[in-house]
Image (cartoon, rainbow, N blue to C red):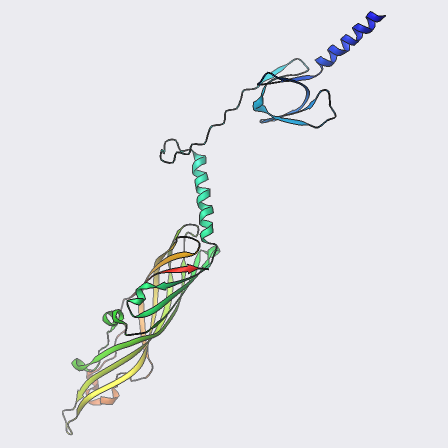
Length: 311
């Protein structure tokens, strides 16, 4: 009777060992378990002596083989992860993942440059013309547009403007016309930026500006018929110059706050005056045939270069 009980217990023990899975790790340790799931990267199982316990998850790379209860054995080779090559100077070994990673980092860095939408800069070239020029811009990123509002005022005679755009002719050889100062300037432009996720934006679009100048003119006159008279006629008036143009330029974003802009505008101008007879043609009707109003010269060019602050 005792022999029967002993052999029965031995048989049950052998059946229990045969009915369990054996997980053999790379370090030769063994775990008696019930394997629940084998994924491409993990093995999920429960301990054979605690089937109702928590599910244990181990990496498939740690497993050498699994001997299942049905007698089959499944072996696993350790998956070797190819290291990411970070040698940017050797184009032959650069892999695609590194290139994509660098592009993502570049995009994240550039996104910081567009944190602040408003920009105010000073036109440095206007100082050579004895003017204070201020440039306001606002990003409209979703539309790839930048709204441009140039402003300015003069504090002395605009020397550069005087030399290039003093196309007045009045009173023949005795005429003398000078711009005393630019009273004010204002404008509006809408610039298209093809790329709004880089450090430098290319800008192109239409623009309009209007300027007011205080002008002084004087010329000598005389009459050939008695009574013979001569003298110098002087007149001060205000000239309004409108510029319809097309702008091309760049916006360089050094960081979130400091930016630089450059704009080149080419177009046509139209002049008007604060009075109907700014040069006094009617004052000297005898020689009015020698006097002619200035023509609207083509083309008309302006430059804008400056640094500014973004807020």
